[in-house]
Length: 387
Image 1 (cartoon, one colour):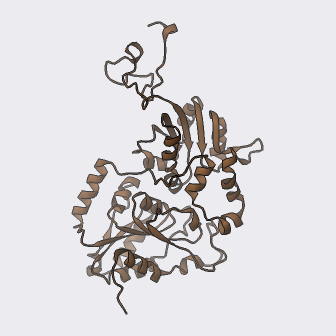
Image 2 (cartoon, helix red, strand yellow):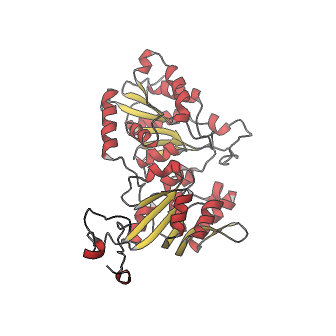
Image 3 (cartoon, rainbow, N blue to C red):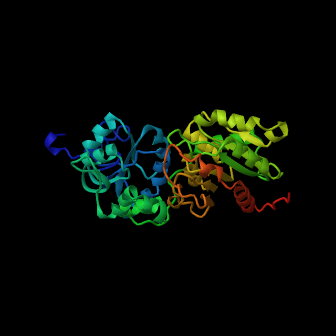
């Protein structure tokens, strides 16, 4: 083969490092995979880095991107802790971790389209650096200010700098707004997330180990949240109160859910009950990581949660969700018709998106626990006991 005759296949599987298949030389014999669906097509980069819940909440754009660009190669760059959210997606060709090596590689690829979902200095600066004919979402200007990259991103941009618009006026979901920012058609697509076969097997084995019985209704309690916004969780006392209410019904079982930061909290909740109560509470492991956490959550029929990553995981797993809001915006969450939202009534300071509360966390103390109970019982069609 002569250098002058070298033609690099425009196939998404060809790397230029080794054969796609053993003893198959695509340069000499033609592409083994050649078809419309294996062509590189439109090269697309999605930048979505900030907060695991946001990354999962942004995955519906994959469906609309594929509708707009059926023959395409999609790359997604995200923070290391969110990579496992995207790993099983059949719509993403390659997931990049936010590190020096990945950024070096991506800077040297010429893309057709870049979608930047994040309004952060570093994400916008990186979007500036990427070579692409079309950029959507957000960029950084010469003064270091975040700016919209296109007309469609204007509403999302204004939402970030206008508290009255974000907290009082807006009634649109975040995923609808993101589609507008990316100038894509939103068709109500759901999150792109699923358990693989080994995870499904693990979940079934765990069900067997805890004596799972389909005649019972399993209510999951996502009890905690990340340290970034620590006031997105109910108190331990509120959780205990709710669980006591549910344990009054023989048909109900409780599933405690959470991550590593919730281990101690879940132990306290679990150990506040006597032996008869503990027999009906499953205190799932909290140290297994994101994918194992999804397996444990999959046991539940309904999930009670604050506006945390656990909420987005429950939505992705298509659970019935009862979610309460305090500091964040209820309107921006899409439940796809499977659940109910609870927001504070006549509380002027909510939402606020503050990490520290100057008002004794009224939004948490005012959570209507009776309403949560009623919604869950109504979903399961269990008649409420009269006290």
